[in-house]
Image (tube, rainbow, N blue to C red; front, side, top):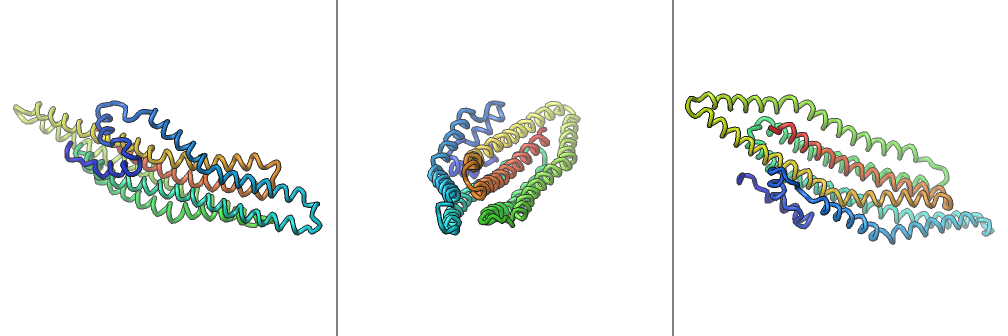
Length: 343
């Protein structure tokens, strides 16, 4: 169908993925029932991301390890110093250096999360015209209007929720954890836990609302469109002389449009995964390394250092969950819309 323009979608893929894959080829392959993408290409992309992130963060994690061991040595050999305040002052100096390193690392993670969610929003924005034009051509007029409005509402609503609430909550949580472990008297732990719970609940609420919309709307709009299509087909079939042939041609055209629309939906799902694969892998690696450092250093280092590293892991996990939730919501929206208007 020449009416559907994939130019904006392909330009975004060229910028973000270097021209891989070709969106129109994926749509045509999906419409023919063929495989849209090679698993070998996805595995290669993921492998490069994992090793690349390990190499990029290697020096930072080495510095954190050295600082944690230095703090442990100072506190374990405190009896060597005549002045009891020397070990504590030295520990505070090391802790402040560690504080700066961890905040710098978290800002990098925050940038990864912000960038990938901006890319997902841009992709959904350029996808909507082509996708809903294909849905209109497949004679799902009512569904196209309803779901198009929901697409726009979902994009803007998630942008507000994530940028105005979830990401600031994650940053506040990490800051509270680091400040809380500055002294042995932990006074901000419950507040940090409350901030983390608020972010988690907001993400779960978003998932519930989106699933609820699809459950309710899926019972109404597609059914109305299917009834109208059936009535039109039966009406053409009743025309004397050309009714049977006309009905067959109409069904063939609508079936082709449904195949194109489903092909666009399937290709969009693959592209969403590709856009998020590398950023999610980076966040997962960083999160795992912080948990690993906390586990390895726990027998030898101070509990405040361990608490910081564990808190950093929790903070990065919150970012990972936010990105994954946005991906899941967009993924569910495209998948359920495609299935419910599948013809």
